[in-house]
Image (cartoon, rainbow, N blue to C red; front, top):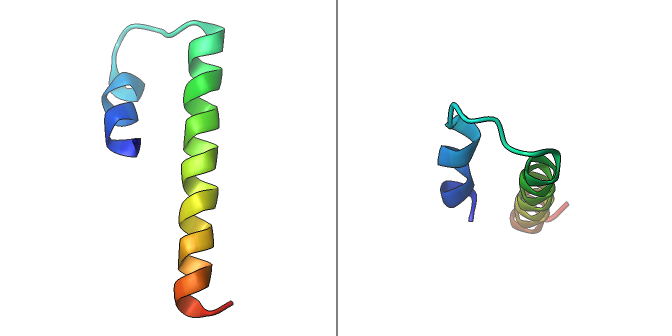
Length: 44
């Protein structure tokens, strides 16, 4: 998911407000999910 979102972030064309919001949402969920996985691995 994150790998697919990376090229669109680096694209020169400016996305619409809704598009950037969707990308930001996807990044947030990916980050929180990753944080949760790291917490599980560390046993926090």
